[in-house]
Every structure is written in C-alpha cells, then in structure tokens.
Image (cartoon, rainbow, N blue to C red):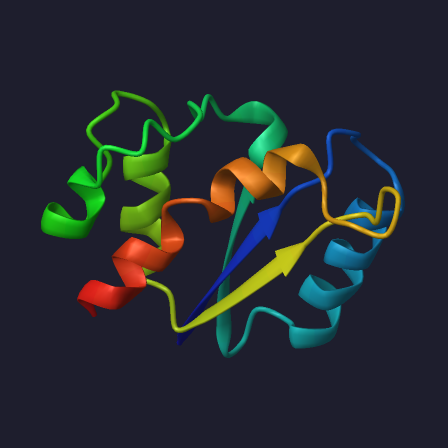
Length: 108
C-alpha cells in the first residue's frame, strides 16, 4: 500500500479545502492507499529562527510539532499539500510549514 500524506493548510474546518481533501481520499480509496492527514491549524509550529540547524541535521532545533511532521513526510510515498488562496497566496500556516522544508529536502 502507498502512504499518502495530506498537509492541510486551511485555518478553517469543514470548508472548501476540507471538501477537496475528502474528495481526493474518496477518489483514491483505501484498497491501495493509506491516508494520513495533518491539519496545520492543529499543530504548533514556531517561526524560523534562521539558525540553519535544519541544514545540518534535517530537523528543527525548536521543540514543536514540525519534527514529527517531518517524520510523517519521510514515510510518505505521496505528499499532497492543500491550501485556500488568500489574496492570491497560500495561508500563513502553510508559509510557516514550508520554511524548513528546503533545508530538509537538500539533505535527501
């Protein structure tokens, strides 16, 4: 089975982003896919300190939910990011989530 991880950047529950996510889950089904949903609105992710610890280790120096999310992503076969568009951009939650990803991806 393939592991699909959904990163939901919406601050709202039961909105259009959740509806799209549910459609994707239903369409893919559960016969060949295992689905994991991470709602960023439920996570505590600190702002980046710019210390570049993640460049050296692949994880964040701060003690927040980002390190467990990174472990979830490492086990994923497919990663789906979802975010509503606020003023033609992703949500603030998604921006804070995206910040350390470049350093982690450079290590892989």
